[in-house]
Amino acid sequence: MTRQEAISILRQHNAWRRYDGPIGEGPEMVDPKALGEAIDVVCDAMEKELTWQEIAMILAIYEHCIESGIISRYGDAQDVQAASEEILRRFHRPLKTTPKNGL
Image 1 (cartoon, one colour):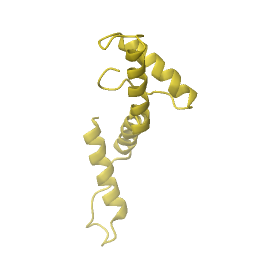
Image 2 (image 1 turned 30 degrees about the horizontal axis):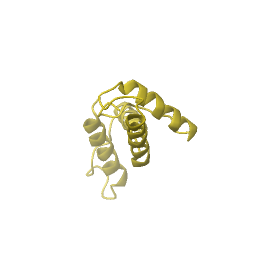
Image 3 (image 1 turned 90 degrees about the vertical axis):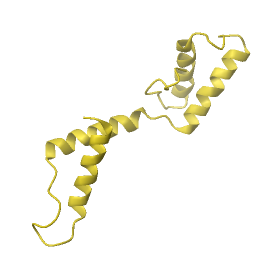
């Protein structure tokens, strides 16, 4: 199931749940199995999202690594990610995913 499909299912479910009109005339109930899968897809996606604070911290680490010669501008992104994970771990927030730009 894609994120868009999951979002659509959750919106359908919410429309059904909030319907306050005559019985039998409102939206159809979403299949419970599909609803559970949609919830899992959206929760997994949300857990993988980085906050702006985390992104800023990772960029600061990257710039520090470049300025101190730890890596070149086109150096090993895995080193930066390892450093980022360590900093975020110290802040009690594990890095759930690699940022799209490969830092």
